[in-house]
Length: 301
Image (tube, rainbow, N blue to C red; front, side, top):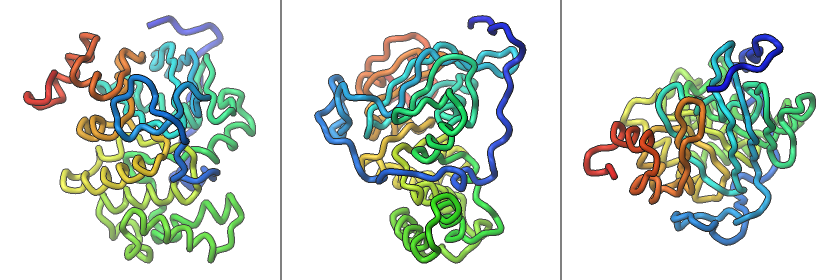
């Protein structure tokens, strides 16, 4: 890894609010996929993003430090509208930090991040503008425990977008129905299973009509029997054309849903390819070693 640039230890941004969805108003319809032909080299039959168009997310030579430790090193990544990206790699490789930098939950020390034409790294009002476009779902749900499911979903639309309560509640019920838990609207988070809470978190993010959804290991805190219900919800979003970046070790999800799999190690993007090529013909030895550890014997290349 390269040495840290001069100028002192880079700062770490203050902790994000307990309910990130309440801070991220949105724009654009979540189910509106970008039209266009399948990108060259993708082997996903559902790929619908534009080939060669302007990326909705562009990261250019991004570096990020935590103190003297460089967690991201020269990251270059472009994501087309409607594209589904799965980011995987060993623990500590920088996966979660990468997606947290996209809506500036973490700051970067060098490089540029452009989201829907807005330079996140410029700071100021650009951060708020980007967070209107990007929804995020975390490992630990981050729901307000003192609010009902419905109130969790209506808080941000009412406060950030100025919606009246009846309209906000109608939108919330639409998305709670979409994630198949409308009957839980009057309950508090503590009365829900982990899988149900994570689906509430997804619905809450969708209530802001984001153009991009970021998922940071959304199933890692769930019991095995709850994983499928959350993955099924994410698959439905992918089928509707949502632009998605998902950090996950669910390789079955990656193989069946992703347009592209990005493998990271030591803060770098080591390899990226369509799922068929990534899983069956990995090029880098580190990728092969990772797949050898995480896949069952019959799934290995």
